[in-house]
Amino acid sequence: MTNAFDAAQFLKAAGIKGTIADYRSRQSIYRQGDPCPTVFYVEVGMVQLSVVSKAGRQAVVAMLGPGEFFGEGCLAGQTMRMGSASAAESTTVMCIDKRQMSALLHQEHPLSDRFIRHMLARNIRIEQDLIDHLFNSGEKRLARKLLLLARYGNDNVPTRTIPPIAQGTLAQMVGTTRSRVNFFMRKFKRLGFVDYDENGRIMVHDSLLTVVLHD
Image (tube, rainbow, N blue to C red):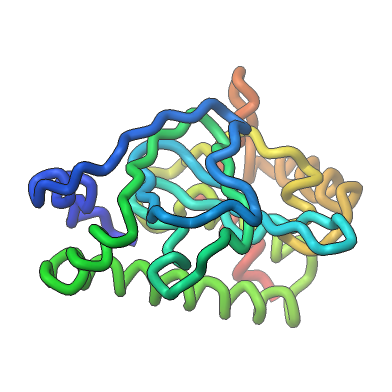
C-alpha cells in the first residue's frame, strides 16, 4: 500500500483534533466489547488485531503497520468493538472521533479515496488469506505471512524487519501448530531466508519469496 498520501498530515491540516497516543509493546489499545467511538490511524509501529471466541480461544486476524486505519467498524454503526487491538511494538496512533471522521470522508475526496483504497486492500488481503489457507501448505502460508508482515513490495530494499512475534501467535495467524512454525522458522533460517537481530526482530530477506512461488 502506498504512503504517498499522508493521511495523518492531511487530518492535522484539516483541523481535526485527533488525539495522538503512544503505546508500549503488547499494551492494549482497546478490548473486545469496549465502546467504539473512534477510528485509529497507525503513524508508527505495528498493531495486532485479535478476537476471542465464547469458548475463550483467541485468534490473531491482522497485523497492521504505518499508514493503515483500524477500528473503522464504528463508521458502519458498530457500538462495541468486535475484537481487540494491541501494540505489537512501540506504536503511535492517531485517534479520531467517528463523527469527525465520517464528516471528513464526505467532504474531503483525497481522504475518502485513501480510505476506500485502504478498505479494498484489506478486503483483498482477507480473500487472499482464505485462498492461502484452503490451498497452500503450512510452510508456504508462513512464508507469505512473514512477507506481508515485512510489507514486502512497499520498499525497494533487500531485507526488512518485523517486531518479535511469538511463534504461538504466528501459528494462530497461519492456521497450524507452534511446533510446525518452529520447524519452518529453523528451516528458513538455515536456508538464509530469515534471520534475527540482537533485539529479537525477524529479518526477512527477499529470497523467502522463493518458498511462496515454489509449487
